[in-house]
Length: 104
Image (cartoon, rainbow, N blue to C red; front, side):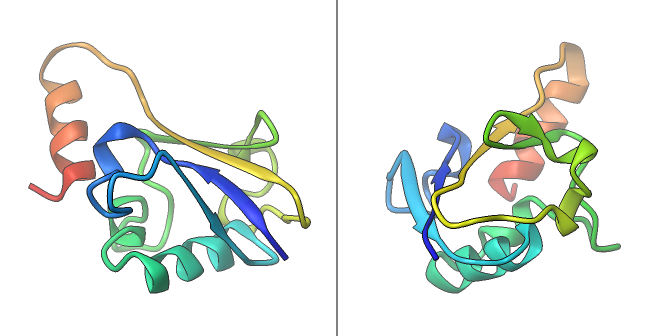
C-alpha cells in the first residue's frame, strides 16, 4: 500500500528536504508510525503526549479534513494523498506552533 504524503516546509528537515514522501498504513496513525520509522522524529512533531493530533496541525486525506474522518483512526487506501499543513494563526500563537512543529 502506497500513500503519498505532502510535507510542509517546517517538517522537511526530517525528510531530507523532500516535499513529498511515500508511506504505508491502514489508518492515519499507522501511516505516521511508518513515516516515523523512515524519518525519526517526524511523528512526535504531529502528535501530543496524550496521543492526539496537535491542534495547530491540519491533516487532509484526499482534501478532506481528518477531524471529520476519525482523526488518527481515519482509514486510508492505496493511492490516497495525505497533506499535512501547519495551522495559520497570528500573533504569538503562530510562533509557538512553528516552534513546536520544528522541535524547538
